[in-house]
Image (cartoon, rainbow, N blue to C red; front, side, top):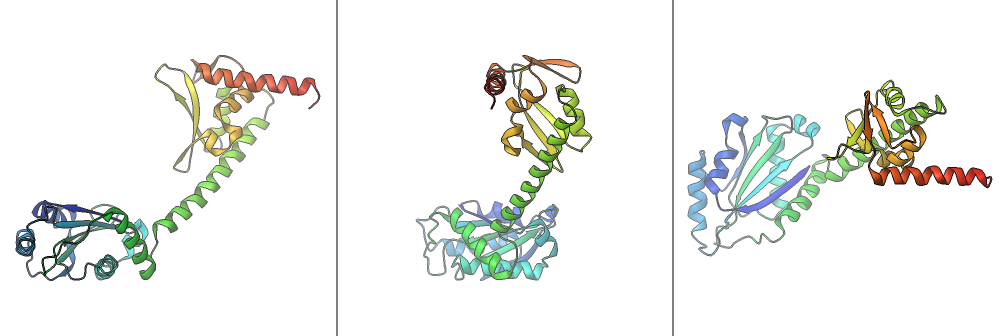
Length: 275
C-alpha cells in the first residue's frame, strides 16, 4: 500500500472530487461530521477552521492506494477500517474526517480528507507530511496484513531478476548458433525466442544502443548483463561503422563505434599474446 499526503486550501473542490459519482465514489468513512454532500461537509470543516485564522492550507488530503490485488479483494468495510487505522497512525483521531473509495479504474484507491484544525482550534503540524504518510501507510499495511511498498518492490526485483536471466540465456543461444552473424540475424533469432530487440536511435539517426522487451518488461542491454551492452553486442555481430536494420543502413554513434573498436583491438592483442 502507498500513502500520499499534502495540505490544501481548496476544501470544497477536493470534497467534490472525492465524492464524484462518475468515478463510482462511495463514502467509506466519516468522523465528527454529520453532512452528506460535499457542500455540507465543507461548511462543517469551515466552521471549525474559523477557530484558527492563521492557518491557510487548513485541509489535509491523503490518497491511500492498496496494491491492485489487495484493492480488488478489500470490501468497503475493510477499506473503512484501513482508513481508520491510517488516521490513528497519523495521530489525527481528534479531527473531522471523511473518506471515499474510487473503483473506476483497475487500481482501487481511497481519497481521505481531514480537517487540519482540531475542535480546540489547534493546527496539525504538516511538516514532512508526504514522508509521514508513506510511513503511516507502511505501518497500516503491516498491521492489517496487506502488501506494503517494500513487499511489492521485493517481488518486482525477483521478477526482474528472472526476466534478466531468461533474456541473457536467449542471447547466448542466438550468438552460439553461428560464429559470425549480422545484427538482423541476431534480432531474428531473439524474436524466435519471444524477445524483441529494439535498436535505440538518437536524434541524429545514429544507433546508440539496444533495449530488450520480454514479458511486458523493457530493459536496457547493459542492465540485463554487461556482456549485452551495445559495444559488446556489436563486437559479436558487427564490426562496421553502420549496421543493417530491417533492410536499412543505420550509422553507429562515434562513441559507440570507438567502444566497439577498443573491444575488438583487445581481442586481437589477447589472441596475439596467447591469453
